[in-house]
Length: 253
Image 1 (cartoon, rainbow, N blue to C red):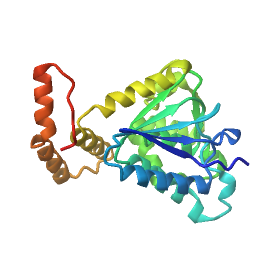
Image 2: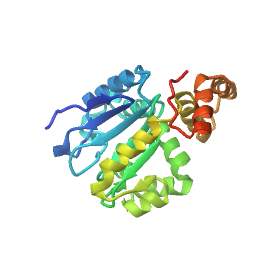
Image 3: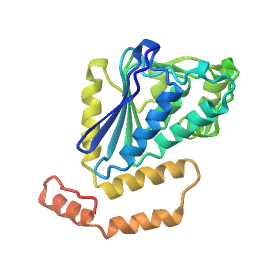
Image 4: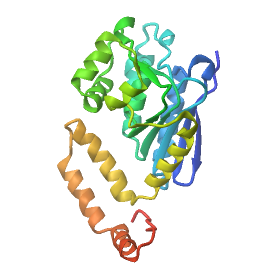
């Protein structure tokens, strides 16, 4: 088995985690989950990083968790996997999944935990939990329902249907589809666009929008973030740049 762990690279305001086990369709092992948890913690601590991309090598994006590693061990099972995916959703930067191929099982939730999901025409997905006898964890079911709606979530979980890229886009799993040879350029352009936004507003709205989608909005925290943005240097810079017809230089203050 290819034991190459995910890699982390940082370039200015953009970080990229890459899954690097293409020989096993980038299946995630317990060791991979530990690496992802550590990398997410490292990125969260980088104040300058505003965008986190998750990409993969090879034909498939990811085939989910290594079911063979379960063997009745709860500490290496759905709960642990779910904790890591919850951490992806809660990541401080805005997240982009660059989906260059098939995405299966728990990897579908990894993608749903990201803020943007850019795919290609060759993408497909399915959720085989019911076929395997595995009950999915709470966070993943919540993401399916909040992102895709109850009807789509029931279809995908309960029938284990495989769907193609066009259907993935229609139900909201993909935020956009681009030609395969344009994926890297599109993800780069989206990363640059997001990285150019005002950090206080960008990161605050990302967090609160996710909370609103799950019915867990902290109204007081939202009001604090609104006040912080309204009194920030960035707001003054944004207004000046708009008036002067120039690109703003935001500093997150």
